[in-house]
Length: 208
Ligand code: PMT
Image (cartoon, rainbow, N blue to C red):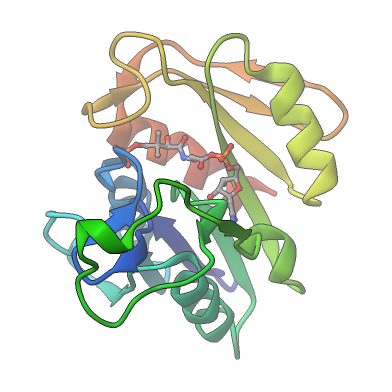
């Protein structure tokens, strides 16, 4: 059987309003790097599209560094070309960006106190013709929202995590996840290392 190419997004995006100020979130990239390490370790060609993080590239992984959601979207479109691919979207992508980005540091007196935002592209919705696995970072019972995202973004399944739970979500080395399928089916896992979560995701992808 020919193994698919894994394209994994990881980390946060940064949406600049000037060269030194940006909107972002606390993603460290640990979850995405674990998925990329696992996929490469299983012999799959693996491309990791990462926002700004402080992690080493796993062995056997091709890494593409990006900053903004628009850059991440363009890099993913490029990465999925030319081979049957599976996109695993672990990145915490900013849904909005400042309407304008100044080319130099803004002076305090030039800032009005109001920031106008515009929507970023939804990478999972934009990228077509590949198998897609999403993540859902929720605060509180994530299944319903995850099932909605799964259907709306035409995903094989969503890996839902409650980011308010201790040892789950942003920054830690562990996660507690549920796989939520488009038909509403849910597979629940105990708290485990992100590497083990990654193994379960890759198992599910390669089983199908
Ligand atoms: O990086 P870590 O510190 O290890 O933290 C891991 C994590 C908490 C970031 C990860 O486990 C996680 O939950 N990632 C998804 C975070 C998120 O942004 O979820 P969301 O519900 O906003 O987005 C849903 C899905 O759509 C995600 O797969 C996301 O990558 C994707 N998306 C979102 C917005 C956008 N513009 N384009 C997208 O493709």
